[in-house]
Length: 298
Length: 202
Image (cartoon, rainbow over all chains, first blue to last red; front, side, top):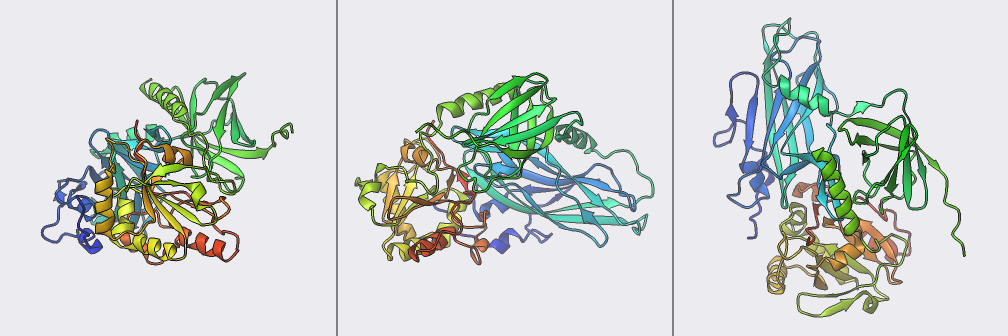
């Protein structure tokens, strides 16, 4: 029942040494099956509940052209990992890139999350499968005909009712070619992930948030749907578990967002993702205007 | 459509489970009475005049284990109870949920881990958890001698289960207690609590 403490460097030891769990598939995908890595904290003998791998959108890299890679997570049913703002509990996956000279990794592109959990503890994340795309800038000095290798140290928390932290060193090796070939085997995964990314707010929308005593009211002029959900980018602004009452307006809508108990300073903006009932999602940044409620009657 | 139904179900569920009164820093901490692992009742009122720490706990959560396997939590408990702080560990896991323990199991755990709380409050119905709106394990609250909540949040500034993070971490609980005891304002009164979700009963 009570776990043995295992040293951290046993966990980080997976770098091609014997006994390490790493399987290599042909082509451009290197898969690391996470089993032993969960055991630094998990029960001895328990299998990990997450498979992580680096995939690429194309099957080769062109010098000077951006390369889209992705962190693909696969979990059994009911298991999940977390969004960049995990919500009330949990922690998002983290990537530490180790790139050759001249390469630069952009920020993770987070697909629109789901609400997870129930009752008073609500989280944001992804169940079962997700691809997190990252754009890598490549140097024009890359030599065509050679190969390039990217690696990343990825850590995550995967949970169902219990949680398992995990960590893995992932590697991706691609040939360098002057011309792009056909899309990689993972291209369809990238298309699916892109369709789940929040879109930029349409230019004809206007958003603003007003702050009252206990909550914010987010008004979106231009979004004409009756049902929507707001996912805050920053923790500690809104109460994740509180219902978000939606009101239809002519040509728009309003969402009531309860303030978080953790909110200590008025934010200048509410940034987040608005997911509409139709399934489309948009990246929002609403300035916060303060209109205090009238003082309560004595 | 499935997503919409799911979203509506969540709204309904959260409306039903809404906490009666969450614990807001700067306000009177919610009064409570709860029973510990030795069958003894504790109420916040009996600790008027003392600092009280509430530590939400789940022995299977990797974030909690970071603090217990390293001895960090026990060190805090010993150091602060020696200075007159009342340290109450709280377990709000429901009876069929992860982290649920019987009184005997908890007493054995405390002994085995050499933990030193003043008492461990068993809260399987989640009454105390919902009263304080405890979200994670660990989630820490500090109530000052006047009964005011002066801290609500994470145990430290390292939201990771990695035990290496303990070296150099800013422990918000120790910091707040030291400041309050010196008559200074608490510099970090709230922070996002990190950990596994509290496994409340359905």
